[in-house]
Length: 250
Image (cartoon, rainbow, N blue to C red; front, side):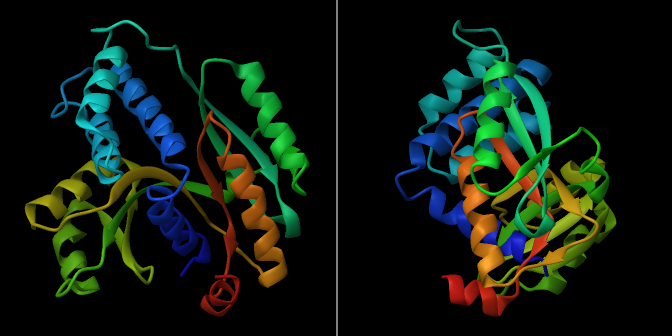
């Protein structure tokens, strides 16, 4: 199983309880605004908005913040910025491929900040398309482990909805599907009474690069620096780290 997935899951858990909570909230509010702008304020009729709100609630975001973000995005309240989605591509230490997803109202600012963060932390920027071919767009649902919940039970619930595989990440399960099947898979889990942590359209690598402790540390530092940027929503990479290496770093 991908060390990156395990690392990202751990990061998500820690991010909502440490000093970065305000930054996490800001990114999630931005995602809610964009989802409401693109698909309207009706949560039941806008799956992207539903998932963005669910993630915000899992992070303990106050309901008032969520409601205001929906209204701004849908044009029911003033103050929404005109955010655009931009993907940047690059390479990190050990030739690890990186895709950086931004939501920004200023392309020049995002481009400059991403470039500085990447180059100062041992990475290089790449031309559009030179990295993207190493990834596939997939739907990814993270299900937290609870007593009595097994991989087989999850697979049974989601198989007919289009799920391709269920992976054990240690503290959670990862349900992978085609991006277009994300909503049916998420809905199948809900129908089965299985709670989930997050449901996102993600980029999963088709080829992974195994890292030792030194290489993993450098890559983690690079991704941390990128994720600190306000405009960055997600960072996708193709590194793989063994359980032993993860344990040594922790």
